[in-house]
Length: 155
Image 1 (cartoon, helix red, strand yellow):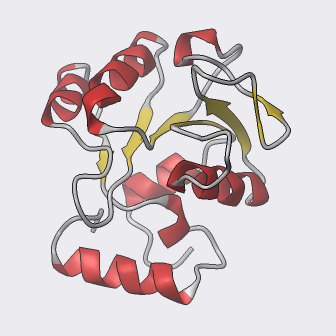
Image 2 (cartoon, rainbow, N blue to C red):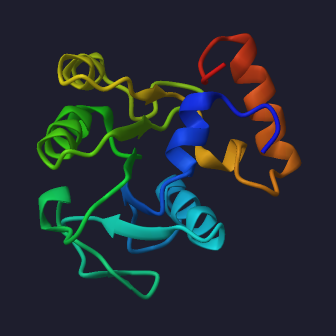
């Protein structure tokens, strides 16, 4: 992956990744991230408290319910619950947390970022795996370029 920031490369090097915020309809940004990570040979675990399956996969109500070791968490929720997601990830000992954001606030909350940092983690703030997982479509290359100019994605 050319031009990938070290924090993103470290996140994507992991095998088991949770994606929070997936929807039953399959139309949420989290679902697109879920599919891309799955198609990039990650073991992706969906989390949504309102369903038991997402896109044919077992879905868990929260991070605490997911069995086994987890490498990273992709936070694609409303910012109002991002701190709760971060707290659960930290309690599980998960070392990699990425908060989705393109234009607007995305899933980023200052409380969640502060919680990660006070827990000894440096979260990825902004962007999404679709900007880095090959093949990157023209739209996400453009988003990455624009958001880098605004310093809204990792370097």
